Image: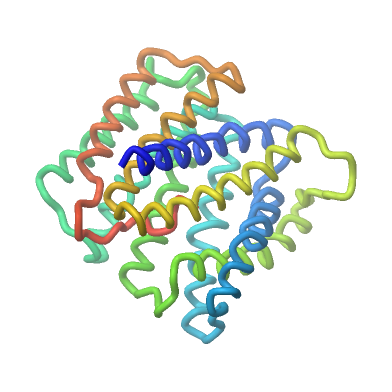
Length: 299
């Protein structure tokens, strides 16, 4: 068990580090689809060879539809919203917003009938709403009131992640494994994001001397896919409920790395909001035998 806990902490540290790295990238001028394209290429480069060695990548119509759904709803849309919001938000606030994914996914799951409600989980939703209020209301966690709309945009990203996970649970994975979904979705994401990046003038040219922001994009991409593969390994060894506890660590390490790497500091309201949100997260977490409506959102 000690080894499993160690893996859990490493995953949280790696995934959490991706949040301030994204902030470094957007602060230097890299934008949405440019980052999405290269991180999808990195993900495909890491996962696709493994998938091909383990039996191949299905390309039938249902599989292609699933890849496209995960690519658009689970990557392009939420990452566009997230990377845009990160231009204006402290990385720690962005990390706290991402912790709301399970609380966003639950009401969607109830509407789609992919999960069930209990008094405790409904109380968790209330705690999440209180946490958001502590972030956005006057005299709250934000250093600047002009950031409020960007917090709401960051929350839009969590809605898309919730839709992705619930869609996969509701309509089925058509016999595909998680790594096959990641490989197929990464390829389609790259095919879509490349032209979008070029048309918007945000394509990142890799054939030039690299600066810190370029390394932030590349390292962030490696950390994201590496952490996701590690998460799948941990699910197989320790179970989905144990592995889901990484949500707390990703947020905690995201805030920690933001303080260490970016020098961010937060008000008491921020820490109160984080505490309330963590209570809500504990209440809505999936229990043993319950489908996880957050799906591949962590990708």
